[in-house]
Image 1 (cartoon, rainbow, N blue to C red):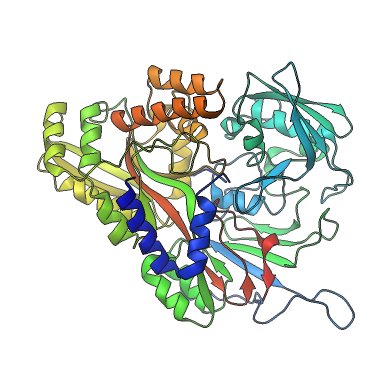
Image 2 (image 1 turned 90 degrees about the horizontal axis):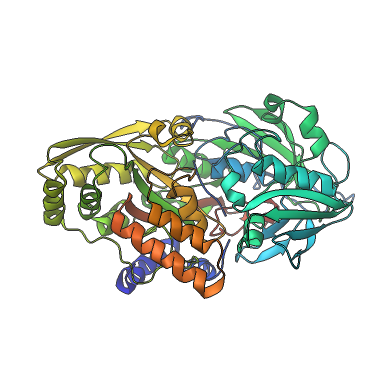
Length: 549
């Protein structure tokens, strides 16, 4: 991103999000790191009604008898969780539900700094590639029993070793980790296949700890519909594709949450979510579209909270199918897009242009790589050079998962379709089915051209590129041995040397154009005016951090 483009997006963001709060959000994102990554939406329509009390009806605080009064909060996302197994998903909306019941050995604060969680100490073991975690005493699981090193070691193995449980789609989130063992009641040794320079960053973002005995005693179907963690909320009821209700865990190892009852629902239509917020049917809603920001801020019921997120939105193109097997054609698709117009007019300034896989502020971001300029003449010429003049292509997109996702896809296809030698259309997809195809075991099962988002809360470009662009990556649609070699090299480096190698990889990705590079997403929330809560750049919607005003 050029300085001019960066300044424009910041000015637009500050104007729309409003003053000092937005400035603080931007400042919080400019440095180190903090969450997630990435891929049906169901819920009621505009006439949905609910009896759930809102913070305007009940207030948390000490009652006359010294007890805590009821403080219920409802959160409405674009989709419901795909299930309740914390290791069997790759979607942020599912992760947001998980984080209230499950915890990791480490975590991050709102500014992205690594913090203790279930571990109170962590270090590298001299003379080896292993690391060690010292766990907290007295932590209990919701269904009974204290946290032990066996639980943590089993959890790690369940993610990274297929024979322990199943082939977890989160394997690459602990890249470099090969296994773990309990070396004491509260001491865990974690083995790595090399130096693994980002191992603590990984554990600060991923690896929800499960109880070994509970997990082994129950089948996968049961685990996918129940929860047993150590977090501040425990599961009350789960109605698949409709609602998750949690209650405050009174024996939590920290102070109990202010929120007593926490409900998750979903509505894929942004207008539905906003209407529910303004009518008092929900207390927090995600992805408020730009055209609704003023209406929310002008209401007495709610206000806007926003932050630039760690999520990139891009169009993947499969390198092994026509016409996307041509680098010239892929480059043409980037030149065909007026990305500045999409950010300004579709997103209303709630976004920033990208030209590489790694966002500004991430390790490995290359400051010398700019977004592709809008040049339809160059695009037309490159299509001719590719030999694919007359190509007809279809863009698969989810609806309601990301901020203005359908509108972005329609704009992209519209710009491409304006070329005289390419025809483009949009196919709207159920998010869950699209993700199932993207997470299939081989590139051949994935759509030829698709819109998707990826959040990376470690603020590390190496993890982004490994998952999305390496030959064996979780969502890759591209294979390049030189690119793989750079990532492998970076995996054995630290500091500035590693950063430089990742910058080279970002330059190569820009030049080879495996994607149409789109935008950095800004997270825009509507929040009940009676709730105290601030948006985070890692997209965590943490009810433990909520309190009544």
